[in-house]
Length: 423
Image 1 (cartoon, helix red, strand yellow):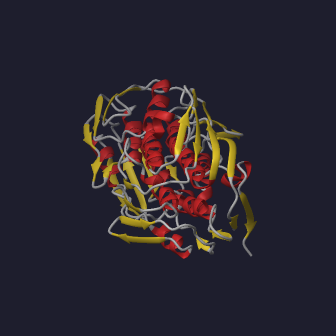
Image 2 (cartoon, helix red, strand yellow):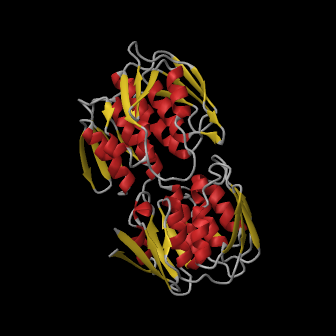
Image 3 (tube, one colour):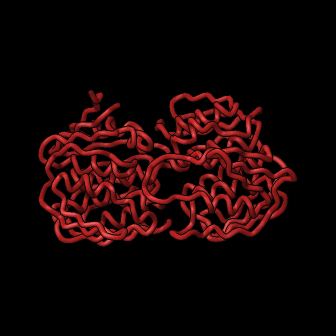
């Protein structure tokens, strides 16, 4: 098992490329189940989550070839069951459910695993698929969905307690592409990753309108065909390196970004006093740290609001920002496990009922810390960049779920980091 040692005090400068979106790649890979024809997907990041998804598809009978960031998938003959040993490792594996049900009329999927950051139920997924005509049964830790007479269009509301569900929207949208008639999804997730999936499906021959808004209309078609597609840039990876530049940078340039997807993150970084500049086309940005930073108040919200997946990273930035900052997570109110580890490094943070009050201090101190989930691990790496001494971060497998070679990219920017094997 690997750990990361971050020696604080280095100044970041230089240029890196942002990888393709992990959260867009996963449902797009799953959507290849909808056709027996080959699909070629480019800019798939080399992270453990996409590797698990590829293993799941392979175990179900798909022919998968991977070369650098390009994945070629042919799902000519596939099983209707996703294996427990792989599904349990990643929550996003639940998104094979919709395409399997549409293609095979039956889907058997284990209740998934992944990061433990609060209650993330699949009831909205099942509600949507039931509305399309699926029968749902639970047995032995598996969810079995059947639609012997096929799926049929319906009007579905996917609003949950904490807002729309991204993977639930993906699942229902994929299933509805082959359903008989029209499906209308109200309170749909509007994230760029949902729009990227819809663009992939439409290129396959689906008829989807309204993706990227809270109302998606899908007219079912008889069949879908194979295509080539390039995944959008990862806005959370981009945001993470934007924060790294605000914490320890003197001009960090990020290539292969999308300005429109980063507005809420850019606003938060600028409100805290730092500089963000995009080129004319919006696919390159440069971030510079300001020595006169200030506290901010942030509330996470569904897109286009401030993303919950950036809450931990901003907490790391604000831990050494003067003044008091308040961060409220309305999506996952329990997602503050990183705060206990930041406090081990000297941070002044109090968490209560989904809200963190952060009083910035001049400098953190190195300490052994433990990653508890994907974004929490990124926050600890960021906090360690300017901490006094060398910080050891264990359970690095969390960060490898969603960041492609983060240690190598930090080294390219001048950080002093090393990945070592735990004894």
